[in-house]
Amino acid sequence: MKADLHPTYTEAVIQCNCGNVIQTRSTVSNLHVGICSACHPFFTGEQRFVDTAGRVDKFQKRFGDAKAVGERRKKPKLSDLSA
Image 1 (cartoon, rainbow, N blue to C red):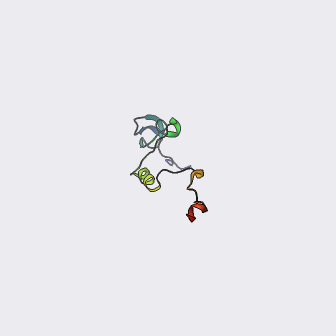
Image 2: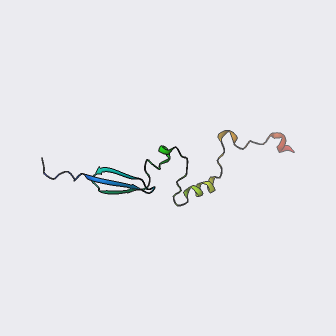
Image 3: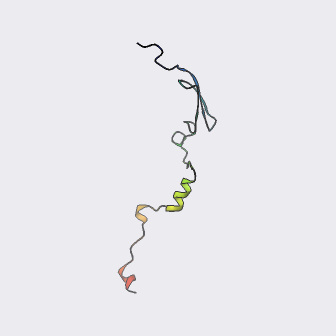
């Protein structure tokens, strides 16, 4: 086998934007992440929008309040058209 083939595996610290700090081992000593298991909605059960550059506002402005499939606009009756 070749010598010095694998990278060094050392203690690592992972820091999240929410303030959570995780101690682990990795080939990279310090990692900064935007979201972790302490603040991710899937693990916390919290429902919220993560708005990046106004994308949620842009979507809501474009499509408005979405209606359920059964609540679509009804076609006018023939009696209403002849009047």
